[in-house]
Image (cartoon, rainbow, N blue to C red; front, side, top):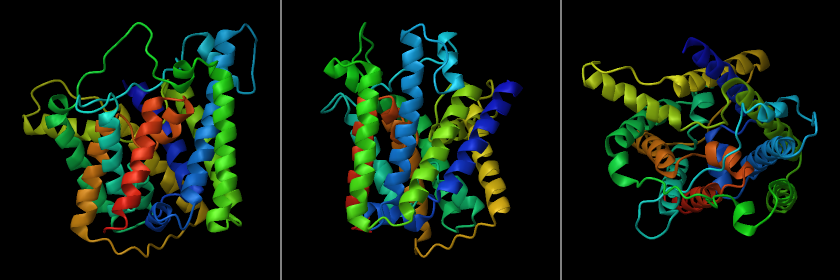
Length: 343
């Protein structure tokens, strides 16, 4: 248990340092992305997703052939069964679509992004950078995690397991995974190039590419250390479990703290980078306290309803070509782009 926590702590520190280095966490950056006036966040996340997909394509290539090493040393972990490449399953409420929980949950995340200027993962570097709205947003996220623990099982239906589930685009379209991932990577690069015509790009293009690549490196480290991919919203679910455990008198067995260790590592990694780089961030966003709390709750509850957040779906899930992740991310930004114009 201690070794698992240490591995998660170390992986989280890589992710936190990468997020901070990418400069994708300030509220202004996130809200400007929703307003389509600054495309830096899009460039970072598309670079991170495409570099993660490149890593996964190497894993898949080695797993399907008898070739030795590929461009990434840790790809050999697939050969020994350490890491299994599995697309994220659809999440459903059973109302209007097999992906309706991804749609509703993603939209809630988008509303939370508009209200807080944060994502479930970027709240942590915001705290380190001393952004005032990060604290009420974190409080709201813990409340959202607790609300999910209390109500989640009654809201979302279990995933229907079938012998050959078609949860990824390559399976749905009958394509080879490696080739489909190469198409995805090319599409990401094309979208990054096109984004330059929206905001002018300039030097932020290089910063976005470097920052996204750093998150891709953190992805590889996370797989190596934890046998899992990057994701942030699970930490708030775990926090909710600990709150419920304490409210019930701490009589049952203790909940897991692996995702909380990852979140703690993200705080430490961000702190280490800020101190080393002497980073100063000023937020010009005027976000009311109640909006930050409600927004934080939307981030966490929406993330668990959708089965992932901007990092779990936007970086890891899309890189594995998960249909649920594409649906969730589209809903996040769709909901956020509407909400940011109303608040």
